[in-house]
Image 1 (cartoon, rainbow, N blue to C red):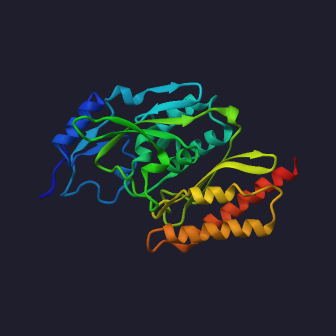
Image 2: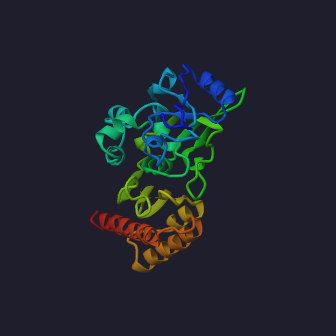
Image 3: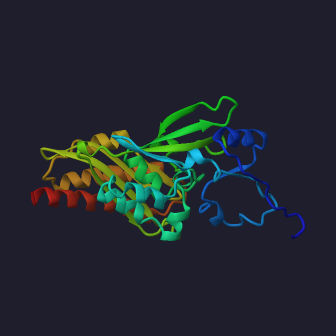
Length: 296
């Protein structure tokens, strides 16, 4: 091994409490789920400042999937492919397709639900999808008490896409709503590859209900992987004022507001093409909903 480099120490806890205890004793150690994100980082290994690893693979509680009446609960170590297998007859066609479009089968068999949500400063598809659906995540703070609390996935990040609990908490479970009786519509779109072209890609999620031509209970999430995680109650309220059939003037008003919001929310040096793409994508989706409404 080159001088100045070392191999990381790998901790293999069997319970969440043991993982937290490992972290308390070794604050610089890194929680390791599927590793698909960590291993893709430039200069991760070898690195003279190599951090130790707390592998979550041996924690059985994090590999369980439970289906209740109104939600599916998945442990943080459930892979995306396992989630798809369980959700085959539970998820809507749109949700199933959105998850199955993530990466290749190799990636989906390795990437975990928890790992996909906990990347430090880059947001990918699962963050956008689950935030749009108003999914909840169980968080346990790294402390001696380690009390669990449920947090909306949308509240895990700031507007610039940074994970707010990095290094001081462990995400253990996710609850994904599956109650079809509420008649929600879900739309997910991805432009370009968030892994290969994060500075050009756009992730778009919209959930809504249509009642007598009016949008109700909308939830919009737009993610620019390296610069922005956008959800706004004020903007959702604006979407709630839409009635179909919609006019071109109304679409322009809504998309112009989105453009203004995104310019305020993004990190500096953001590719302005991404903002334009996000705005045009919203316009396309609203026009598609309009066409579908007129077709009856």
